[in-house]
Each structure stands twice: as structure tokens, then as C-alpha cells.
Image (tube, rainbow, N blue to C red; front, side, top):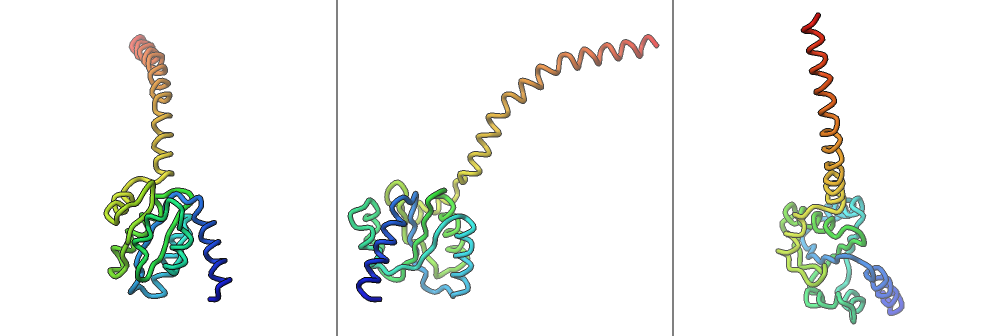
Length: 170
């Protein structure tokens, strides 16, 4: 890679990481190409990005940004995963593969500040945006449904009493 290509890669990374919600770093040492491709596929399905990157290029890209706190983690083979949408999704995928592929290790993350690998595991256990939205919607719909059920109950019971009285008289 010549100097111009490196500069373009740094600019691409800086642009890509400009508006990410979360950036995760992992040591991918020991996983096969097939396993890495499986992981990439799952990241794409979750609208996340996964990329193996040179530490020196990533250090230059995050220099003078809030992500610079991650510079200490940039040693050894490094892969990064990030999301511009739901920050929980990349954490879930990384934790899943850390359990599945023993040599694969999460180094840390940046999500509203530096996060340790233990905090990434805790983050992965949280519900995602879609799940939270569906719970909120269900909660919002529950009150009107209960009110409607309550309003319909009295007339229905009154009709049942009239119907029972009609059957008694026949």
C-alpha cells in the first residue's frame, strides 16, 4: 500500500466513523477465513459493518476525535465492527462469536465513552431498538384496548341477562 492509498484509507475510515453510534474492536487472531466470512454475513444482516484494519491507519483516522480513547487497544490483529443505527446489534454478534470461536476476543468498545469487554457483554444482553419499540407500542396500545373492553362489558352483560330472562320465560 503506497502513501496515497494509505491516506485515502484513513480518509475513508474517518468519514465512515464520523457518525457511528458504537465502535467495537476485537482480536480476530485464530479464526479461519470461512468463520470470518460467516461473521461478516451476519453483520451485514444486522446493518452493521465489520472490517479488518491496520492499527496505524485506524490510529490516524480516530486522532483528534472522541474515539481516540480506543488508541490503547490498537495492538495485535484488530478487527472493527460499527453501526450507524442500533448499537446493540454489533455487540450481540461479537459476543456470540466470542463464545463460538474461542481465540476471537473483544478488546473493547466506544459507546458513549470507552467500554470494557465486560461492559460490551452487558450491552449485548440489552434488547435492541426494534424490540424496545415493539414493547413501547404494545404498552401504548394496552390502555385503549382495556378501556374499550371495559366499555363493552356492561352492555354485553346486560344483553346476556335479558337473553337469560327471555329463555326463562319461554
